[in-house]
Length: 324
Image 1 (cartoon, helix red, strand yellow):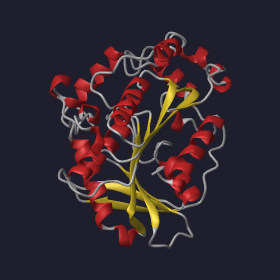
Image 2 (cartoon, rainbow, N blue to C red):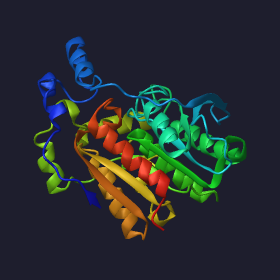
Image 3 (cartoon, rainbow, N blue to C red):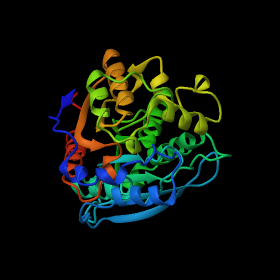
Image 4 (cartoon, rainbow, N blue to C red):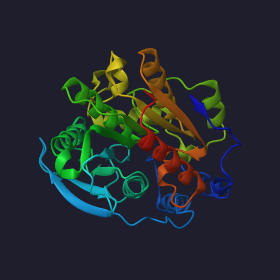
């Protein structure tokens, strides 16, 4: 496990923490005033400095209907041997789209910096009528479609990765699991602050200490996480399957080489760390980084030096590939 030295919240966040005083946990009891303060806290830290890349909107057939997606490539990329990445945004399975920074900015940066063809998936979101595993089905359909069209997309079929952030990290690991089961495994999976277990594993003493200075507004407590997971499942978490929460997979050796980047001040780090330990115990190739000084969702921290550091780490992983 790679550990970056902690010095508490990054000063850019410290300057904004007062905005979250008396703001409840995510999605619980917000008012117009607390929503305003959340938006102010999450405002860009600076210019995103987005590179110029080519984008193509796609419509991929899926079992529940068409799945929108967007392909990103450098303007110079015309090779048939580029790496590929099927990427899923986060948002607690209920929010987000192709334009959130974690999706659009990340895809643009990876395409520009590494020459990777990135396909970002606009999967169906959970609501009163749509439940898991529908988002997974959409993402797996997108992965299959990309796998079948690697030549047309200019992707090396031996270097097709899958990845995502938060709930998207869950979906990416689910896709990697089903891809392995169906005989066309992913090259590697890249997960940012993923939630992989229906019930959060116990936090380490170090994580518990970090959470003591984390405002409630940022915290996905075990109780709050359980409430979200049961809502998106539409049934008790005891009935969840490995395709819905990959941490339940009995044989972790089926997963591809993995890069997992967790956020320091984030309850969900317990899930990412436990999953990494489970992969290692199964003999898996896994590299784990704790991004220091940041809360959950740090790929959305537009214009921050912490985001630039994360881009550099993901870039290195895509350029260098797994160790083995």
